[in-house]
Every structure is written in C-alpha cells, then in structure tokens.
Length: 182
Length: 224
Image (cartoon, rainbow over the protein chains, first blue to last red):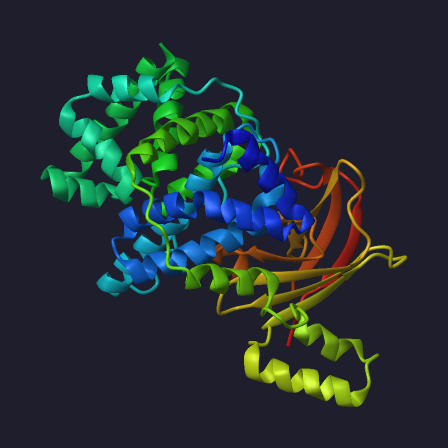
C-alpha cells in the first residue's frame, strides 16, 4: 500500500517526465480510480475510456498539483470523479438528444494553486456527521458524490419536486459543514 | 441579504459546486469568483478533501492490462519507436531532407489528425518559442516548447487574447517540453483570429487571474 509520501513523490516527478514514477503511480491507484469511475458510469467500456483520459490528465496536470494542500489521493479521486461525471452528463445529453445545450464540464483538476487553509475532518468525523443527517438526506449527498446524480436525478429518485430537492440538499450541506467544523 | 446569510450560502454553494450540482452558468459564475476569493477556494478545497472520503467505500477494480499500454501510447507516444509527438511540426521546420520530410508526412497522414489552428508563440529575441496546435475534434491544444523555459521557482502561463479584451488564462504550461492542455467549450469558440501569449508568473500561475509578470512571447492563431 503506497503512503501519502509515495504518492506525492511520484506526482512531483511527473512534470520532469519520469516514466517510472508514472508506472508506480498507475500501479498504486489505477484500481481505486477505476472503481470510482465505474461507480459513476456503470459501464465498463466507457469507464475504460475515461480511465485513459484521467491518466493522461494526471500526467499533464501534475505540475499544477505541487503543494496545493489537497491530499494526493483527494486530487487523484477528484480528477477521476469529475472526468466520469462529465462523461455521464454527455451521455445523458446524447440520450435526450438535446443539441445546443451549453456544455457543462467540471474542472479538470481538483483546484488551482490555492492552499487548503482549513483543516479537513477525518473519515470518522465525516461518518459521524453523515450519521447525524436524516438517512435520505445523507443518501442524497452520497449519490451526488459517488454516482454523479444531478438535482433532477435526485428529485426523481426521492420523488420530490426539484426545488424541494435543492432546499433539502443545501440544508444537508450546511448541517454537514456545521457538524464537521464543530 | 445579511453577511451571515451570504457566508452560509457560500458554504452550501461550495459544496454544490464540488458535487457538480450547479447549473453550468452558475458553475462558471462560481469559478470566476473562485479565481479572486481565496476564502471561497479554501471552502471548495475543504469540501473536496472531505467528500473524497466518501470514495473510501468504493471497492477498487483492477482495470484490464491493455489499458496501461493504451495510456502509455497516449502519454509517451507509440512504444519501441522514436517518439513522434509533433509529427506535423517537422513538416514546418523545413530543415530536414525532402525524402525524410515526405516519409514523416506519410506517417502523419496515416496516423495523426491535422490541427485546425496553429500558432507560433515567439519572444522578440527568440529566447522562448512555443509551437501550439489545436485539434477541434478533441479540444486539445498541443504545446511544444522549442526554446526557453520557466525560471527557477517560476511558471509559464498561457493566455488567450481576443482583440482588445483582457487576457484569459488557458492554464499554466507543464514543465515538460511537450504538453497538452484541454480547452473548455467557451475557449474553443474564441480561438479564431485571437492571439496566444506566454507570461512569466509565480510558481503555479498568476494568483490574480490576470498576467502579473512580463509577457514573454506572443503569436497569432491562424487556421490551417
């Protein structure tokens, strides 16, 4: 199991063109990232395509990672998740055949060079705080993150009007933030 | 709205942004604020870090082996052959013998799409030269740094300038000689007839969203 330092070292070597570092990083995290992408897309062929894109992005964006304060795993997972969700939205648009809608894309990388100036909570804190939310509301946050559900998807899933869904989710996020900062 | 309510809104909206729940125009507006509001960026980073913990519950799935080969080809070029990331460039260099040039041309016609736009971004004293090629089909802007580099602890940042408009950042140039930036849809539509410029910036890029250091090199984008 690669440590945070291993991951940081490998990522730091990518902008220098290190193929060894790229191979090591791939061995260490490709299965996790593929799992994350597959959870969003639920389609192996599409997920394979996105995994390729993700590693090309990691290679080209590594110089921007440097020390932006995010943990390397968060940075990697965010790139994978955002790429998977972009693909999901494209597929959904194609299914609706709604040509001409503005193309909605999530950021390629986790963040710019801004530092993470606040202390992030631990996994235990997150689990505890998610546990304080009403079960459905916690599920909505989880579905949005892990499956890339949009507000429309969530409203349909929980069978509530769109605006109710938005209010729910915003309140859940605020409650979560209050709890996590406690 | 009171300041406290604004603050609460930002916390929820940063979460919505990270989850990908904002409508496209809301997300773009939010990103514009992000560039100039470090506190907002910090809230986003916090949500990214904490929500990423949800991925702990996702089981790893080993990808098929052939994928790594495909990725390597995309990153490093075809294996066991001299890498040819910029086949089209060689056509423009003109220094190689005609026979070699036509061989490269033949290879290129078979295996590589031709760019839709190009630019040579050149410093006045030629101390920095970057060749750029844009491929409409993929939205990729390929960059080949042929001379010069960022100073120690500095970064080169690429800008798009349309007429008299303020420069818009296309991103920090990776340190590798050959690199690819993916342009978002809004940028793609603005390339024609615009100018690309490279500026000298603090490591990681301009902190303000506008060039802060010297503009080192410029080049006009032309159709191919």
